[in-house]
Image (tube, rainbow, N blue to C red; front, side, top):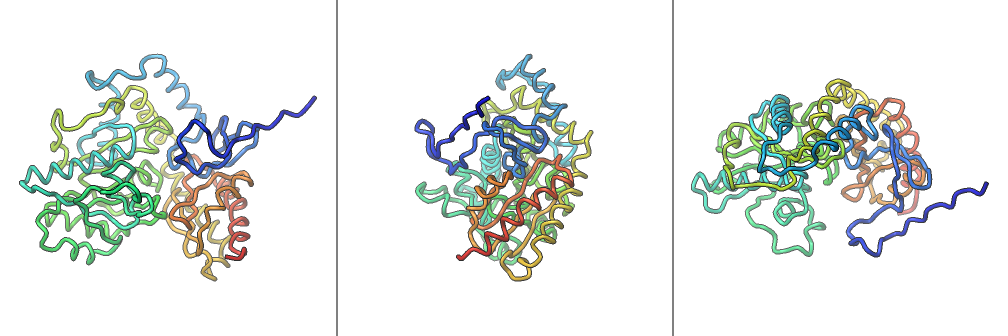
Length: 407
C-alpha cells in the first residue's frame, strides 16, 4: 500500500486576506489537549486557541450539549427573549459578585461596550469630553476605539487618526496614575487587563489593584478590568482580579467563556449596570442560543470537573518545571523572567524569539510568541501534570538551543 501523499499547506491563500503570519499547518481534529493536522501529525496544544479552548477539544460533556442546541435553535435575534441568556447572566453575576450582564460575541465588542459605558457615564455627569486612563503595552482589540486604547504603536500604525480621550500610564505605578490625572475633571474611568496578554503576560500587582480601586472610589471613576484573556478560571480563580479581593465596576469577558464558540460579555456592578438603556447599545449575534448554551455548559463543566483548582495546581507545576529546566538561563539573564499565574504563563527571553513558534510546531508543540520576546503558554484548563511535564520537555531544549544561537 502506498503511503498517503502529505497535504502541502501554502504560506498564504490567494483568496483569503493576508492578515495573519500563519504557521503552515492545517489542523484536522483534536481530543483533550492534543490536535492533529491534515497529515496526521499530533501536537500538544499549549495555546488553546489563544486562551479560548477552556475544555480542550472534543470534550465528552460539551459536544453532545452543543449538538443538542444546534438541533433546536442556533440564532433568533434579540427581538425575543433567550432563556439561556438569563441563566448565564445569573451565573456570571453569582461568580463575580456584580449585578448585570450584556452579551456580545467577541472580546473586542466587550471592550468597545465598556468604552461606551465609560463615555456615557461621563456625559450623564455633564462631562462633555470624557477621558479614560489606559496603560502602556495594553491590548484591547483592533477596532478604531479599542485600537486607540491599546498601547502598541506597531498595531496602531497606519490607522490614524486614532480616537481621542485616552490618557496612558505605566502599569503598577500608582504615583504615575495620580500625576497623570491630577486636577483633570474629565477623567471618568481607569481601564486595564488584570494580566496583560498580548503585551507580554504582565500581571498587575495585587496591591496596585487595591490602590486603583480606592482611587476610583475617591474620585468617582469607573474601574473597568479587561478579563478577556485572563478570566474564566485561567489563573485559578474565576477572574484574575479576584486574587486582590476587589470588584470592578465593569468587566469585559470573552475567549474562554464559550470553549471555542464565540461569546463575549460585559459584566457590570451597581455603578455601571443602569448606564445603558434601550437603544444605547446592541448586537445581532450576541447572546444567541448556541453561544449562551456554550457558556452555560462551559461553566457547569468547569465546576463539575474542578477546573479552577486544576488550573492553579497544574499551572504552578508547569511554572516550577519551566524554572527548573531554565535555571541556568534565568541565572545568566538570557531568560529574563517566567511570570504569570495559573495556566497563563509568559517566558520572557532576552531577544526576539518569533522563530520558536515554528520550531515548537516542528517538535509537536503549539505555542505563541507575543511582545516579540515572550513565549506565551495558555493551554486548555484540563491540562494534566503529565502534559505539563511534556510541555517542559519539548519547549525548554528549544529555548536553550535558540538562546545559544548568535544574535
